[in-house]
Image (tube, rainbow, N blue to C red; front, side, top):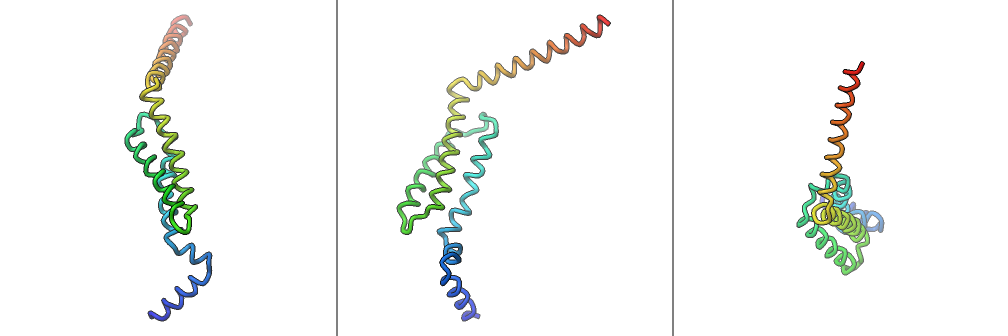
Length: 134
């Protein structure tokens, strides 16, 4: 059995593409892509759900591993791409966080909600007036 495993491993390692797909240089970034995918999907959610501290930590994490991916030999461009996407998504989230909490976004959203509520009340009053006048 050990000879069979050794032969299969030698066959895989002889093919450069299969050798790459069976390495941690490939599977590390692939398994790590869940973080940037989640971050990109989170850009569609409400900005009041964003954690400023976590966004900052993930920015530092992604910058660190972008640097690491280019420092190892051979360079791991797939890992770089993974963390580049995450860095962009986290910077977007950071901007949304600051815009909502520090630059008046919360007040603007509250004002828009108030205007919508007032329009609904005016519509109800118009409906009552129209019902009475008929």
